Amino acid sequence: METLDAKDCQLLYELSHNARQSYSALAKKTRLKKDTAAYRIKRMEERGIISGHTIFSSFARLGYQIFKSYIKLQGVAKEDVTAMVEWLVKNKLVGWVALSTGAWDLIIGALVKTPQEFYEFKHAFEYEFHDAIYQISTTLMVNAAAYSRDYLVKDGEAKQALFFTEQRSTLLSEKDKAILHLLSKNARLSTAEIARQTKLTPRIVSYRIKQLEKEGLILIYRTSLNLDTIGYHYYKAFVTLQRVTPERYNAFLEYCRLHPNIIHNVECLGEWDLEPEFEVENADEFGTIISEMRSTFADVIKRIETVMITKEAKYGYIPF
Image (tube, rainbow, N blue to C red; front, top):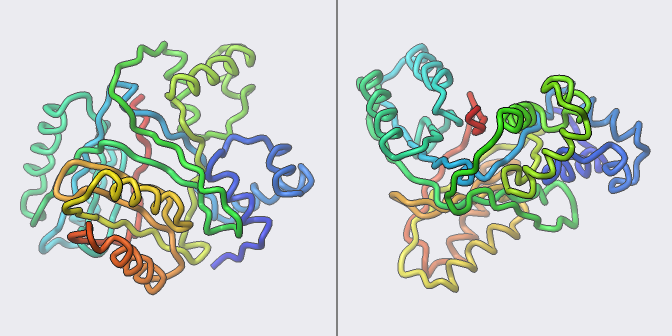
């Protein structure tokens, strides 16, 4: 397990809500020299603590919807699971593939234009692997929020970015698509390098990025972590509500926003209503958080199921 000091944690915290900040800006916020901040970030990349830097986009404004399928497997060998994951990773509609333990064994996120498109994808998947599938539950994402990793620092600001809003199709030029694609692969890619790869000038690239941010097509630049390298684990809860008033519902959303270990929260249509996601040191800490959540919202929580994400085989929701 890798050890992080306070300055490393501060850098990761800053990168969690704006991974595209310059080394100068990061140095100022963490009270480090610019070269020192750059060295520490590169060192965490080399040590495998930082797995990459990406963007979150308003998928709805690109004209897309996100359906998720949660799968319980039956009687499958390791090589069968590998074949299933490889099939999913290769599928262009699939943006997220995660292996898990707990209520579900496999989670799929699909980015589609229409429900019919998802229906056809799901049918093809079930046909290909019907012997391995015991149960499937599907949800439609309605809204989602990403929160800063406040557990890394003493005085986090509980920042959030809503990355699923009203659905409306935005026409993008091929150059804009190319910029989004490059930033999704590496959100810290320099303007000069993006200009070189897109055959645009740095000034035009900078302008186009600002326009994409203004339109909500880039909502947040986010650093991804290999949590196991620092002794943390990734959990997801599935919360079913009952008799909930708008006031209590908003109180639950605010609770998630302010909790230092909750890094995402998804509102959805389906078997459950909310999917908060957690980064915690161990199962005991997660259990304590869930118990506190049940107690605080005992009047509206009907059921909570959980999984621990053991591996993310694919993540990338930019469809081009």
